[in-house]
Length: 191
Image (cartoon, rainbow, N blue to C red; front, side, top):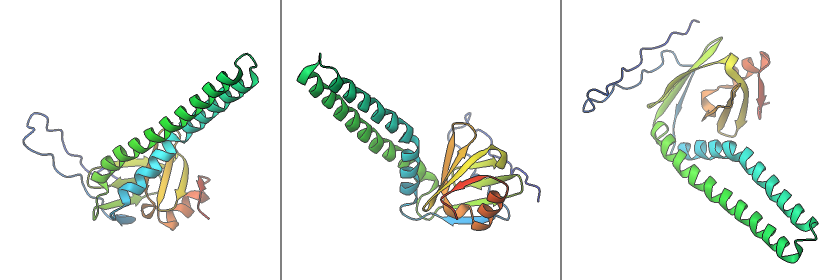
């Protein structure tokens, strides 16, 4: 099946009082998903935790290094060890606060696409997949996917670049995951 791009709305910056038309819907979708009351929250938590994992690991490594240096350095004595412990606690606390704030921001953003009752669709072809929601439309070529990670009701799509997407698991039916795994694509969290 050959996939064609539906026409996208034209920019309307010259007339801000006239809203843009809705994004096009997909013809013959492979999968359809209706968002529930916590869909945006689940996607947001997965997105932020995935995004901040590397930063947290770096923060903990830095904290560990500061602690080891402080404890190993006899020149610092007790004051240096306490200073290192205080630094570790500040880094950990700041990381936690920032993660909580970022989750709220992303939940608000994702809430526009995945509000309760919002319908999203996916059409999977041999070389690419199209995804559409009330506020987004994008095409994802299979060659651009580095890995898929199934995390409960969410799929993390890691691209070959540093970017990634999170979408509801229902938009990747088992038949699609099986076909993609048979092509050699790495899929974790899926049998």
